[in-house]
Length: 163
Image (cartoon, rainbow, N blue to C red):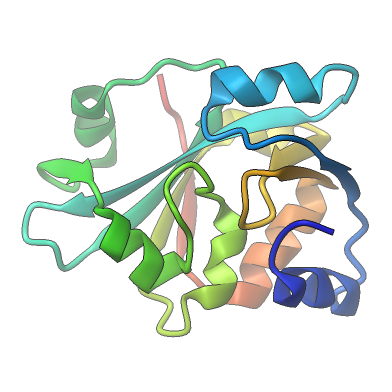
């Protein structure tokens, strides 16, 4: 299976069921959508930001069909000026590469540095989908299992209303 073997081992250890599909590289939502047809999960957009000082990092998870500009996100999160984190920071904190951003990268955040903001509309969906730390596959999991995964990882997170 494509993706981080540590992730699959953790999901198995937590008794989290998932559906797996392999597909060609899908570094953008537009490309990935063509491979998700016929799957009943809510597909997520994952954005990795840093604050102005570069000492805080945030993963923002929202519905893939929602268009959000960075200024709108800054205003709603109340964390000051944000910018997309560099490739180096993405690798350092989540062990990921651009185009493969996923909350499953939290398995690599041993210091629990990254804080998550999750669109509260996603809380009420049955299933969510994310890349398994690489953009050549997608996993579909129950939202309740995703919350169990987050609780296990131990990073701080909050559900917020994203407009």
